[in-house]
Amino acid sequence: MVKPYHDAKGAFTARKRIPRLAQDEYAALYGQRHEVKFFEPPTTPRHEQLQKFHDWLAETEGRIAAIIAAQKGEGTSLTPRQARALAGQWYLWFVERHPVTDERHWAGLRDRVHEKLTDYVSDEAEAQDPDALYRENPKVREAIMPLLADIGETAQFLALKRIALNNDARGLFLDNVYDDLAVALQRLMRTARGDYSPDKYPERFPAFEGSDSGITPWQLFEMWVEQRAPAAGTVESWTYVFEAMAKHFSERSAASISPDEADEWIKSLINSRRSARTVKKTWLNASNTVFRWAVEHKKVNRNPFADVKVTVPRQRKHRETKAFKKDEQQTILRAASAVSDSGKRVDDAAKRWVAWLCAYTGARPGEMTQLRGSDVVKQDDVNALKITPEAGTVKGGATRVVPIHQHLIAQGFLKFVARRGQGPLFYTPRKRPAVAKGAKGRKPPYAQVRQRLAGWVRAIGVTDKHVSPNHGWRHTFKQIADRVGISERMSDYITGHAHKSEGSRYGEPTLSDMAKALKKFLSIGVQKLHAE
Image (cartoon, rainbow, N blue to C red; front, side, top):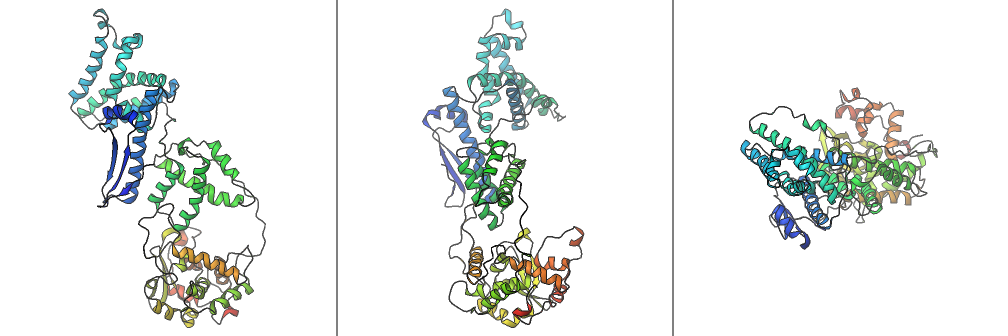
């Protein structure tokens, strides 16, 4: 397996050895004999480096595979329609491949084909239609094909497409190239003269659906992660999806997965341990998202998951609300208050403050465990928390500033922050951060803290599996906000919930407005902080 690496100067580089069997032909076609090198300077963005590497590797391996397949007489067969469609792709590729060049260059290539035709016929036959000579004289056809392949650069085209043709398919394809080469040369001659009028010739070609870049599902996922830079939690959960997909479709390219196979695999994931809701929300959503992106970026021709449907049975309601009940709130907050934030045990500070912070902000648990001292600010005379993706991850990628409830201040939260300093409040930064984010990167520290807190909440007695041990505070906050008269729009801004309409985004409240609203939350202690 070819793996890219950064050299001493930071350039992105890789090497691919050429098999001995293909070396002579590869050298004749592309110049290199023993190995092919890839290089991207350090100034190229990371996601572009990786994308260009995958393109380079696919092209190189396609070239090698095509050479070996041709030597063995193996490869893909083509129907006449497929051969015509493939020649259409070649036409577009060939015309777009060449910049404006002297018209005499293209005229010279056209004349070479004509001269080759007349070399293999008698003087009497020279007056015949050259197309008829090619079609009707097997000797002429056999002699002309190598020249067509040379002038048309068909070996390079097929390698780029990762298509290896058998002998019959190659002949069928080159027969079509013969028909289109003269038109392509004429088009290039017109361009050389400055004629850029629309080219209607490609309208005659049918669509070709047989091309395959050779990129695997896992490679698609890696490329998507590099370009889209999703949240760490998304990468973590979707990694399991694409690891399983890679195992199920072992040694298969992403483009080779059919819609029926995609549907069968997705349906097979539903079992006693994995509900239809989970499969739809995570597994199908992940597959659909990455393959849809791949289609948009020309990595594959179709998304086999586009029409896959998962029927989710109506969910039984096991409790009235996803918010914490009164006794659950008290259990968590009393246990939190009993922990010393200056303790030396792992997560003591998080146990002391995160539940209280979630209770008074309705924030996502991860948004609180990733807080830094520098995110605790004072604006317009209001003590506040800056919830920003710079600290880790925020759904939607939007920063928001929310007020700190007076009860938190009274409990000593600001004093705790002052002692901790400007860095992370609830975890110790890694001494050696990862060099680059990848699809299999370690879970970030703040996510690990969040998970351990969930386990702690279960351990202290909140054991109902139908309420989330951390996320339950988000529902609890919304419930309390509604009861004490805080508008839904205001609580959406505080919690970072998506707005129900585009109009509700206008005239967003100020920090002072939110602080005024938050005063409606009673702060007399645990007994008063509950949803009934």
